[in-house]
Image (cartoon, rainbow over all chains, first blue to last red):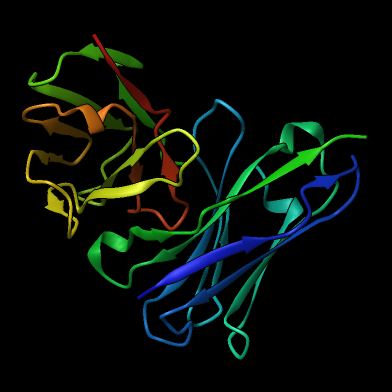
Length: 121
Length: 107
């Protein structure tokens, strides 16, 4: 059974760096085709894809946030970490990590429960 | 980026109604189109992948169709538990994008 869980601070100040960790089980990030993505959702708004890391350490970022995001993986700990620099109140959102299926249209088939992050001074 | 446009933004339906939500991509994405359902306070739940394949465990009243740029999600007979927000998402480009969502409300 695949599970993912996000963790990180619930409150960060503007201009600080946000670090979120996705801890997963039930799959390995060294399996061909597998990936883990990050998606966020501001309160009352739509989903926004942020970043994706693949089993081979290839990485993709949302063009609008690319300069502020870094995604890394630690396969020994079954974790994926997303860092976002220079946060702003508009970054207030629920942040989700999700498992990218190796086939099935490369979809995000399993999601974590999400973690709410508020950016405020 | 590939832009995904859903319509309508919201719709009202009664239990038992047939409902259709559309999603249009700004360029061709073959069948790399996925549909998610999201209920308040919960993570999205995958319904359909590859435009028309039903995710395991999803009721058969949900179906998807389309290819290229135009796609639809159909609920053949809406049930009380189906009132939620629905999102399409393209995975053709490695820069994934979501539609803006369609909220299905009770009439």
